[in-house]
Amino acid sequence: MEKISRRKLLRGGAVAAASLPVLHEVVPHRRVHGQDALAAEPAPGDPGAGHGTAHGGPEGHASAFPRDRRVDHARNGFDPTEILRDFDYGRTRRLRGGRVLREWTLIADDKRIEVAPGVKFDAWAYNGRVPGPTLRCREGELLRIHFVNGSRHPHTIHFHGIHPALMDGMPGVGEGAGGGVIRAGERFTYEFDAAPFGMHHYHCHSAPLAPHIAKGLYGAFIVDPKQGRAEADELVMVMNGFDTNFDRSNEIYAVNSIPFHYQDDPIEVKRDELVRIYLLNILEFDQINSFHVHGNFFHYFPTGTSLEPAEFTDTIVQAQGQRGILELRFPYPGKFMFHAHKTEFAELGWLGFFEVRD
Ligand code: CU
Ligand code: CU
Image (tube, rainbow, N blue to C red; front, side):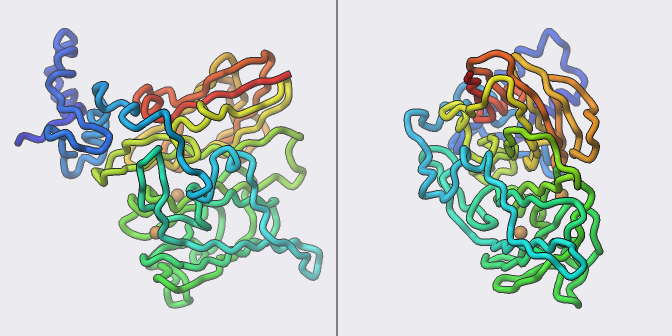
């Protein structure tokens, strides 16, 4: 069968505007769980191919999983509403000379989680949750992350930040000193300075990289500036998704893992109060993600490394690994939607609401 994708068709250049409506009929559509016999295979060497078509027609819409049931958060061991405001400050003590040493223990494990009502996914998780814990520290501290690989697969923790090569969590770099790839049952302690301040993240860097990220080994890593930031209602949003049928394209899109969660459980914020969102895009297989809020604008601090906003807008885009800080106040009470400004992602779960109260 001739392999076909929306991108290939468009790249052909021969598609006249008048023939565009025909594409909908030409391109095979795939259901959420891939039962469609006409499913288009992604072309080799074209990693994005197929994803655009995968969720095309109404049968590919997220309504394919039941909306009258809820994910069992207690069984998953994490709840997206709690993840929003859950900052892990680790354990601290003062070193001689006054500097703060901050330590965490992160355990990688294989864990089956429910990513949509009735849809089970064999995830790999740090500390039992996807995304992993939001590690938070202050610029200039000494950080120690005790990593235990409790999984049946080799993993690492690769932090974004400024650190020595041995501390980079990179397979092939530092094995002689106990670092590099950390095999099943082994452990390693990453140690580095908290720098620069900003909104960062960590993820596994084992090969092949795409599944090690896509299966859930990532989390936010916040380095506060020495002087701190203004008091605010702070929220962590990790834009992610799940490839539930292993075709290297996502069937589920979300913030903090569970599709439509903040539609069912809107995020309550106070009118006129400063809201600060730490936003990360870790979505695998898709080239870009975005964030749009209704009825409002926000100041955007890319990577959070400057205290001066770069933009005042209502929509931003992030490639994988990009992140930033959004600051906004809601002047009006009521419900305001936020979502990926990519309709396909929104329809497959990446949307939610703020509920603004007086
Ligand atoms: Cu891994
Ligand atoms: Cu990275």
